[in-house]
Image 1 (cartoon, rainbow, N blue to C red):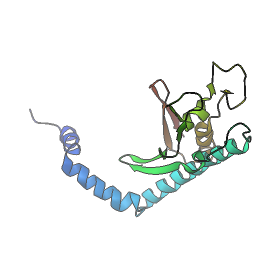
Image 2 (image 1 turned 90 degrees about the vertical axis):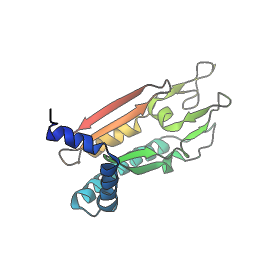
Image 3 (image 1 turned 180 degrees about the horizontal axis):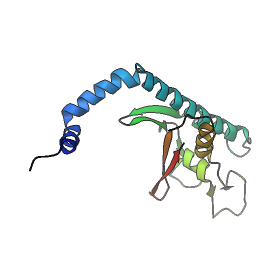
Length: 174
């Protein structure tokens, strides 16, 4: 039985030849912003990144720590990465881990700590943002603020991992 055109296309899209051609197209047109659509998409990604950055900055200005010193690495960690499907805003992994104050030989992932908060059960004293913090959803806040002025048809997916290895996806469509 002959394969349908769609089946043939799907099969071709899995080949190295297609991937190489697609990568060259993306490199030439999307990454360099040569096409009008690519430039518009990149401009919107930049706006979204700016909104998330504003929320990170809001978090930093919301208090001044007295028990520990900030590295400010999170403030400088947002990066835009080109993907096969468009663009991704992520964190520079070199900047967002720090040694745990509580657990030796353990590193904490700062974006997740700030987003979800934390509670140190073994502490006898509740110290805001040191032994206990309810969280500040800076990514979700940034996305929601961006969507207020985003063009119709924008679709955003947040892939979020937990400390327990689970991954959730939060979807926004305008």
